[in-house]
Length: 78
Image (cartoon, rainbow, N blue to C red; front, side, top):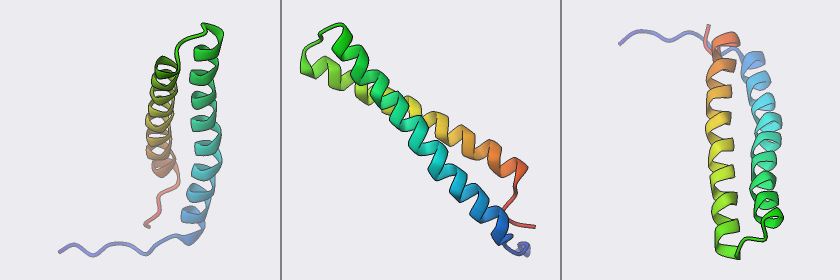
């Protein structure tokens, strides 16, 4: 089995902190956008919840790709 490098704690802390910050902003923004679309068009509650769910899903997908890109720039293992 190949030996892994040591953990770079500074990079781990940086990526973890940025993930929390960007995740809160991104998922919150997309959730609020789904809520706003449901309210603007005066949709029934079920359809408003569907828009919220789609928004949260898109936010989580965006966060996943953000973390992948961040790990390429700031690798956790040396």
